[in-house]
Length: 141
Image 1 (cartoon, rainbow, N blue to C red):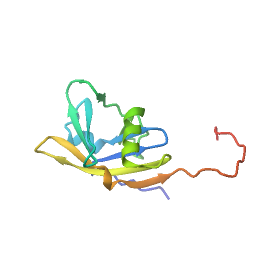
Image 2 (cartoon, rainbow, N blue to C red):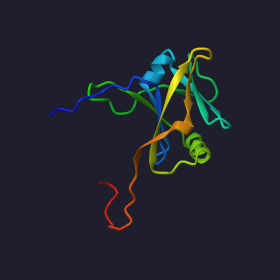
Image 3 (cartoon, rainbow, N blue to C red):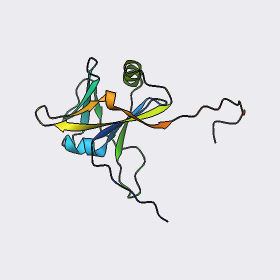
């Protein structure tokens, strides 16, 4: 039986704490106007991450490039950012576990033209299971 793919229509961010990667959904990029750059604005007091879409590169902005794996329909659903210092800061402030992936749904705030994500609402979507048995096997599979 062929698996059924259900597209996620809500904007979301996915945080991979093991490899220090942040994934932004295509839905988020779309609601921001499909801009070529994004900028992340962090409010440490409220644990809120704002994402702004930009037409030009500015300091601390990132190019939008869909490099993650396409879905079953061949569509690139996420844009991946490898920003170790940024991820380390988020992981530390949110007290997230290393080796765990988190997903945060957000919404578009038309008044400010940004996507808003409350990181306190993060849900665990996968956990790395450590091998404590010391099998001595290779990491290469």
